[in-house]
Structure formats: structure tokens, C-alpha cells
Length: 276
Length: 328
Image (cartoon, one colour):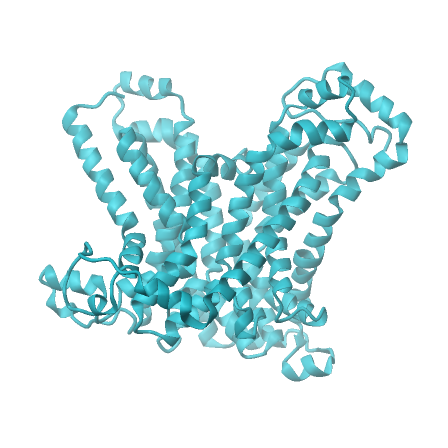
């Protein structure tokens, strides 16, 4: 597909304009977070900041125990992702490497569970957590994020294990490894990229989650970042710099995770889903 | 259950003789252990799915036939009231307004997301590597910005006094927009929410479709070029068949996500002004948690599931069939 020079220039200009439109909200968040409150509320029209100040970050970090909310979010997110990875890997191994009765049924169950809209389940889950005495605790959120990301995790990891040739394990077994040993020494290390990609998706889901965090947690010091950020905004509606700085801090872990595995994201996401 | 211990080959590979031998050896060593092993490994995942997803799903249905307000919740009494929750919900004209609004809203943002993603994916194929990477990075940035952070930014952009949008419109000569409130009516509030949902959803769709497009072999496009096909004809004959299954999948996922969208709507204006940007997901929250009418909310949740099943039923059917084909 060779294109003439004018064609290429037009396409490039369109591409850059589209990129600018897409990046604008993120850019505006960063830029606002670096401005002084005076600049933010001045009627001046400047798309590019003339000075930079980190005062908003100090405000955001100092506001009612920001580190506590950050910790809460990290605990439930990292905890649920780890649980999902362990349970998901344990399930993916037999699904991919062994034949047993009920295997198909389990795969269908996983697929259907993946489709269930979780928000419809929050009433029974609310009652379940209340009966278990977990309401208003971080473990309740951890459990729910674990369960909601699990079907997806199983499905992805099942695909990844399938992608690792069984011959490699065989070779190790010929060299004297047990089957378990062969899996642990050969397949598990090769599963690394799959585990990373899968964990990014689960991380984002748990990191973003708002409804359950809003409903299940009643004590302010146990809130997670999204709930805190939403209430921060209403409580301090005029402090846009502070809100934007808090948003930036909140976005950073997700951005870092995403950029790390950017290339693998899509092949991973679509691998399991679009065979049909 | 005679061949339980046999190992499977990854699909597509021809099984050589050795794993079978290994299986035989293992079977001799620990028949019982081998038979139980897969179930032991599946147990954590199975337990979590059954307890935290499947059982609650059954519960939603059961609760919808009960009177379950704060009183029954405290006393623990179970009162069955048949279809009362459903008749009450369905006879409320407000419910129909909100259902209609939710459907239109979902359809609009799904259509915008898919169309936007498709256009971007096709555009990306035609871009040079440098510009393409720039576009990709901006997409990843939009994708990775957390939902609530995005709602705060959009509120800031659309702020009536200091928002950059009104300032820009003023500069462009539309002076009527000074101090214009984008959140004063339900329609414009929903438009802003829709825009932000679309902005966040487009990257996933674009990347998925782009992955499909680059999967098409170069020769196919060259052949189309030699045959003198126009850009549109090339798209119809070469690109579209290749990305159709992916488009169906991302459309299906978008419907699921957008129909249930809550965080953005609630965080922007809590369904306001005057409930005009309220959707079914918001009603579910208001009835169930804020209003403590769990039975009524159960009925709404069930109705939502039925509506979703009606919209996506055909695709789920298709999906289950191909999956089962895959699994055998």
C-alpha cells in the first residue's frame, strides 16, 4: 500500500489531531494539578502552563489521611489480584493439562460467570457480607474483587498455559523430573508474561471499582481511593487543583502498569475471546 | 473415568507416544491421587465462583419475590409476596421512562464507541509508524486513567465558570456559553457522561480491532489494490470479514458494561438534576442500598438481567456453541 506524499501528510495531520483530542483530558488533569489556585481560577486562557507548582500535591497528600486511602486501595487491589492469580493458575493447569470429568462444564461455568453483570449482585452480596460479619471491612472488598476478576483470570491463564508446548514438560520428565516438577520448572517460568498481562487487567478492574466500595464501607478511614476522590471533590468543590493532583496520584499506578505491558495487552485480551 | 490421568496436548499438536507412557506409569503409581488432583486444584476457583457469583445470582431472583425492607432485614423474617415487587415496579411510569432512557443511552454510547474505535483502528493502519505510536500512547493514557479520576477531569473541563470548554467556546465567538451550566438538564448531563464513557471505552475497542486488522495478510490488500478496489470496497471485502467476530465481541462487551454503568453517572451528578440523568443502575442503587428496599431492588436487578439477556441473547448463544465446539 504505497501512498503519495500529500496523502501521507494529510493522514499524519489527521492522526496528530486525533491524538491531541484523545490526550486532552489526561493532559488537562496533569496541567491543572501543576497550577496554583490563583492561576486555576483566573479568567486567563492558557492551554500551556507558564509556571509549575507542586502545592496541590502537598494539599492532596495532606488532606484527611490520603496515605490511608492509598494503602486501603493497594491492600484490596493487590490482595485480590494475588488471590485471583493463585486460584486462576491452579485452575488453569488441570484445565489445560489434564482430562477429567466435569472439565467442560467448569469451562462453561467460567465463561458464563464472566458475563454476569456484577452490579446486579450487590444486594445478595451485601447480605452475604453482613451475615459473614465482613461488612465495613476491607476483606469484603478484597473477596468481591477476587471473585469478579477470577473468571477472566482463569480464562486468560487457561489460554496462556495452552500456548506453552507440552513437549517442553515431556522433555523435562524424560530428564527425570516428576510431572509436578516439570510443570514448576518449565511451564511456570514461561507463564510469567501471561501472569503479568492478566494481573494488569485485574488490577485495573479492582483499582477502578466504585459501587461496592461505596456500598460496603461505612467508616471513612476504610474507604478506597475512588470513593475518597469522589467525596473529596464534592466536599472541596472549589479546590480543583487539589482534586486534579489527587487524581494524578490515583492514576499513576494504573498508568505505570499499563505502560509496562502495553504491547501484550491486546493480544492477551483478545486471545481468549475471539476464536469463534 | 478410565483414562483420567491422561495428559492433554495443546490443541493442534499431534500427541506423540511418550505422554501416554508417562500417563500409564503415573496411573500405576497413584490412581486415586491422580483422579482427585484436578478437582483439588479447581477447588478455590470453583468455590469462589459458586459462593460469590452463582449463589448471589440465584439469591437476586429469590429476593425479588420477598418483602425485604429494613424491618425484615433486622428481624430476619422471610415474607414471600409473589409478584408484588414486579407489579409495583412495572406499574410505575417513572420506571418505564428510566428504562427507555437507559436503553437509548446505552445504544448511543455503544454505537459511538464502536464507530469511533473502528474509524481509529482503520486510521491507525494507514498511519506512519511515528504518528501511529503517538496515537497508541494517547489511547493507553486514556485507557489507564482511572474512572473516577476521569469523571473529576470532565467535571473540571465542563465547569460552568472556569471550565476550559466554556472559555474556548467564548473565544471562538460563542459568547452565550459564558457561565453556561452543562449539568442543568438531564439531556446535557447524560451527553457529558456519555462522552466520558466513550472516551474511556474507545481505546480497548480500537486496540482489539487494530489487532484484527494487522492480522490480515498484506497480500490480500495488495490483491484488492491490483483489482482496482476503492477504499470502501477494500474495507467491505477484506478488512470487515476479518474483524467482524472481534467487532461482535467488543459490541457485546460494551453493551454489558454501558448498560450497567454506575460510577460515572453517580459521581457526576448522582442521577440529577431532578433524576433526569438517572438510569436503571442508579435506580438499583437508590432503591436497594440508599432506600433499603431490597426486595424491590431485587426485582429491578432481575428485570435488568432479563433486558440484558434479550439484547445479548443471540450472541451468548453463538458464543456458547463455539466454545463447546472448542472444548471437545
